[in-house]
Length: 194
Ligand code: FE
Ligand code: FE
Image (cartoon, rainbow, N blue to C red; front, side, top):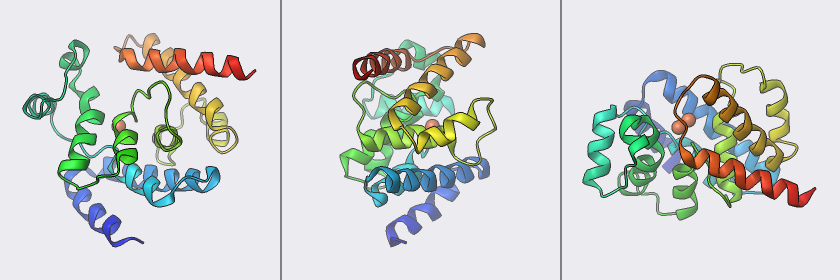
């Protein structure tokens, strides 16, 4: 494999805890498989998958501190739940610390938790791979969502957004408003197609 990817793997193994690192490898290979299926660039998919959680293991208060230091926006919901910042901060670190200058990869890292309206193919791939990678806990919907990822990417994206919102709301976990926005957008898009 690409020398750059091997070097990054080595660095990330030190930045992440063991579970997160294994998850990262799962997302990396699942992203690559989906890229093969949908004709996206496999190297871009590997890099985006590998780096998507690069900021995940930074403690919450440090996440806030770093975002402030780098001039990245922090919303009220994010001040309360700094975990939500790992995507935006990760995108920043991917560029500044890991020297990824491909903006398609940066965007895929940045939107991997909440999605966003009008996602690129690579963004959809990383978003879905993050949810379905083999190491993920067997959620009740996994049996349907995993094959759907390789059958119809937009239906799969929609299904994951819907299930996530139902799950978060049922548990009273605060939802990033962008997740709802993305859901509403794709609900509309799929209606247009039907
Ligand atoms: Fe993440
Ligand atoms: Fe992840």
